[in-house]
Each structure stands twice: as structure tokens, then as C-alpha cells.
Amino acid sequence: VMDCFCEKTWSHSPQHSIGYCQQCPDKVKWPAESMGSPPPLYFNAGMFVFEPSRLTYETLLDTLRITPPTPFAEQ
Image (cartoon, rainbow, N blue to C red; front, side, top):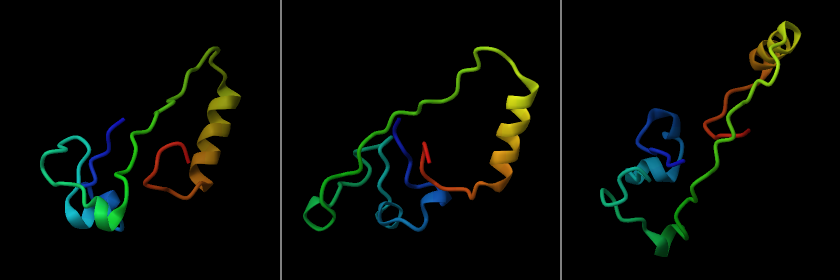
């Protein structure tokens, strides 16, 4: 998956401060000399439901309510 560091969720990051976007790599040249290697792409595992379960659904929602949000996938 390619991230768009232009989005507000990335406003805390150095990628956002320079306007870097993996979806438009020609927009801003990655400053490797000052920031090292560009951020890697990541695998979005998603979620597969083999057998619907009301209990599992409710447990997932309860977990979602108490989990602090993060701008990163698979956290």
C-alpha cells in the first residue's frame, strides 16, 4: 500500500512537512541525505470473516472503542 503523507493524519511527520507522497513520487524528491531511506510500502492485511459471529463482532467493536487511534496500519 502506498501512503499519501499529504493527508492531515500525517501532519506530525517529517514526510508531511516536505509534502512527500508515495502515490505521487515525482511530486517531491525524497531527501535521502537528510532523512535516510524513503519509508517502505506496507502490507494491509485487512480482515477476513470465515464464519459470522455476533460475539466476535461485539468483541471487535468493544476493542475498537478502547484502542487509541494511530496513523499507522496494522497497529
